[in-house]
Amino acid sequence: MGELEEFRKETEAWLDANCPPSMRWSETPGTNPALNDDLAWGGRKATYPNPEVKQWLDLMAEKGWTAPTWPQAYGGGGLSKAEAKILSEEMRRLRIKPPLVGFGLTMIGPLLLEYGSEEQKLRFLNEVCRGEIRWCQGYSEPDAGSDLASLRTRAILDGDEWVVNGQKVWTSYADLSDWMFCLVRTDPDVRKQEGITFLLFDMESPGVSVKPIELISGYSPFCETFLEDVRVPKDQVVGGVNNGWTMAKALLGHERSMISEAFHEREESNQLVDLADKYIGRDVHGRLADATIRDRIAQLTMNKACLDLTLRRSKEAAKQGQQPGPESSIFKYYATELNKDRTALALNVLGPQALGWEGDGFDAAELQATRSWLRARGNSIEGGTSEVQLNIIAKRVLGLPD
Figure 1: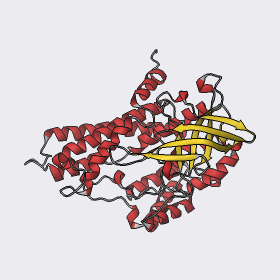
Figure 2 (figure 1 turned 45 degrees about the vertical axis):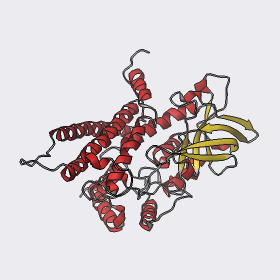
Figure 3 (figure 1 turned 180 degrees about the vertical axis):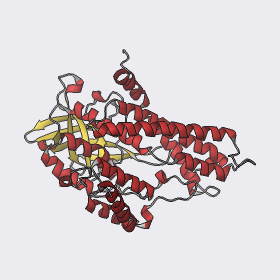
Figure 4 (figure 1 turned 180 degrees about the horizontal axis):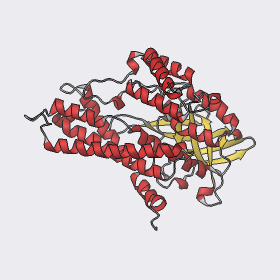
């Protein structure tokens, strides 16, 4: 037996023996595992009503498998790409939930691995892997959304500290986060992209205040963040002073890849078929009774397959050391449009049962489907609007003129 085959056998046995029962995705027909909130985001403010969530996080962190390919010195597992792929495949096959999720693993962590100082890597990455720190992103501002380079939050050097003043908006989970990675203007007298710096700071620093924004779905994942004379040590700059735009583009590549990955290798078509079985039924030939729904599920399945195969090709390129580039805008745009189509189709399948918001007559899955559809409308805004992605694709991928 080869080394990888032996690794697969040992990994399967360990996962099966150690994964708590509640940390496996439900196989109940019609449920969408992506809607399950029983996941660990970590951080100082984390609570674990289900103790098995924390148990699973601790077990996987001890092995370094919360970040399997990161170096062991930074809390990762030190696995090769091939070994990490096997781990992912076995977790998926056994329907095992991830032990940890969040921006630490998918955004700031990869950026620090590439651009952070050794001190920053040792300080923050180990905490990320153990689920001891939760991060939020300070990019968008009230007057700097799609035109991010127009940001006005200002940082002025005062001795060994930056003094930061300004406002960020649409700050995902700022009220639950411990630290922020933030873009600030440090030189107002140069080209706007050239006077930006990438800072890290503790959300408990004096002068930081957060106000959640309630969405139409009833949730408040986004926040306004106000910064008033927040003092940040000089050594919490990443990538150098006035080099923040380079950091911003690199991190946005990771973010857009992360958003597209969030919809990667889900089982949407099977779940939609289960829903259609329950709410529409089958005809005498054993097919879903509604021909239009059949056609839309088939189209969604084909579109999903195209996304999955393209993402896999990109992953193969990443194995050769290529960082996410402008092609991540393709993934982000297509994946979010696909998710919007999926949630809309689920409502079509539910029919009148998709009209509920609260009260009797609707079960939890039906109410969740409605909220998921509303939440999906934001997919084309977060991480860069669809219009911005199409512009990037036109200019930087296709090479079209302005």
